[in-house]
Length: 275
Length: 294
Image 1 (tube, rainbow over the protein chains, first blue to last red):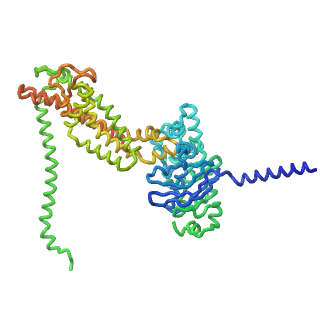
Image 2: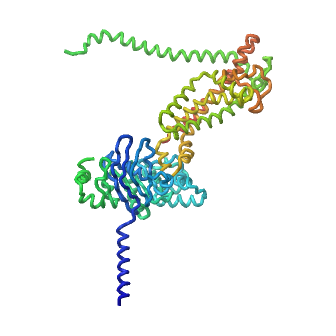
Image 3: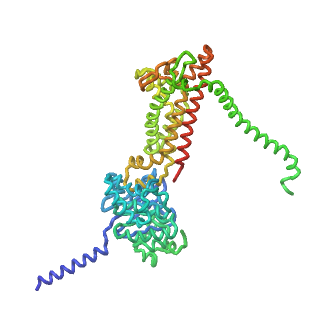
């Protein structure tokens, strides 16, 4: 019965493929030979990283190692700094974002960012969240209302602010402001969320809330997070990249980085010998 | 052996303290001088002019007869002038400031422009008068009407608005711009929705201060050819007009002929000072109310 065997074989093959697809998630950001200079300073040196979708990728390293510069290159925010020079390729969903024909506005609509210091606009809570959809042309009040509620719920802050949506966002606590900024970022329905030390200005309880939130968000989004805090990287990330002096020293599963790092410098850093 | 000889120190202590007190007195006198002069000026003006201020003086037209003369024409002219100066300086000044702060690449050219704007602020106002006469009154053939005067004044006070707006725009924190750019906003959307609203109080303060300078200036309008005796009240920006300081100027000159004109000039000064004081107070109020919330 050759036909049946063949079919059985085929089934096993498909199953294998599915299994493989689960293991090998799609790459969302592929950085190839990235170099970056601030004037004469060589800030990023030959960065090669492949970042998967629906994962939390942590970037750790001492101050000045280039981790913030790297994450800001991923949405080309780094270009706000005059005298920046970049070479190499960053493929986002297989398109090179450093190509001049790639519109930054397009990129930043797919790739949201949460900053180090909570930076809500001096506007109402509602207006803060509705800002993104509005600049992308959504005017319908009903749709905006829905987006605002969905985003605030997504950022686990809806219950705290639903009764004061029209109050100024500056009246919120630091932790609430940061979650509001995450909600504002969700409102543009991004594909990737970049987080540049999002908890460094927050107290431990607010930090915990943001960390829990990151865990929930990775179901839907790909998250790249820069952090100073190694425990944080260990707690929330799937993969970790260790940066030092503008180079990637090691990039691997978070468990592996923190238990059996393959580079001596990684080990020294995570055991607190420097940095 | 100690280096500081306490006996020497004691000997010199007296003269050191004396110098200390002298310095304090000197600086206090310097401060006092300006204040005293101002008080004397205000006293003289009030003494000469206060008795002449009444509703008739405010609402009457100009006249050669001091008893019947009023400044309604000059007040209306001042208002019309502000109506031209305010939008023109606002658009040109804020536009320039936005370009310099947000668009222009930081380099030699932009710093050259900035230096020249500061230099422009130092150009004597009579020179602007000649510019206004040549360009607006003659070349564009507007004559000495509100529009010509207003455009001239707008150029004169432009640097004030540019510099104030630049400072206000620069004070908007970078993290607010980043937040906006980070969501895919264009530069113009960011300027319109984030930068300008945050900079508005500072810009408004600058505009009001510029306006109060514009309505206190005399020379440019005299050069443009404001008539010394203008009886009709202006109805629009294409009418001939006069403003309070110009009226003060002509009355002061003519007081050699008619002594009461000096009193009319003093009364007009009181009105002008009240207007300027009110405008500056509004500017300060705006500044205090919207002081940095970042």
